[in-house]
Length: 82
Image 1 (cartoon, rainbow, N blue to C red):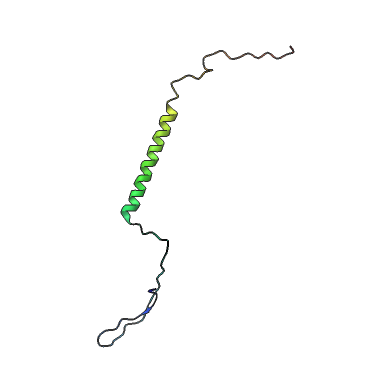
Image 2: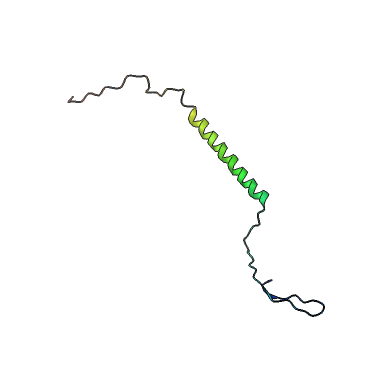
């Protein structure tokens, strides 16, 4: 554990003012550098664009077809006693 109070001492036995060091170690921390972060951002943007194109293609292909009921006369209902 590197926490504590430190002093520098020269060969002529002169001592510096005390320096207190606070250091916290993390057991589950992961160090991430700039290229890793930029890779994650680029991958997220590419995945989002791919998903948007896929949704657009899937929903856009039904526009040219008619549904089963389209183009037919509506059904007439007869209300009354039989």
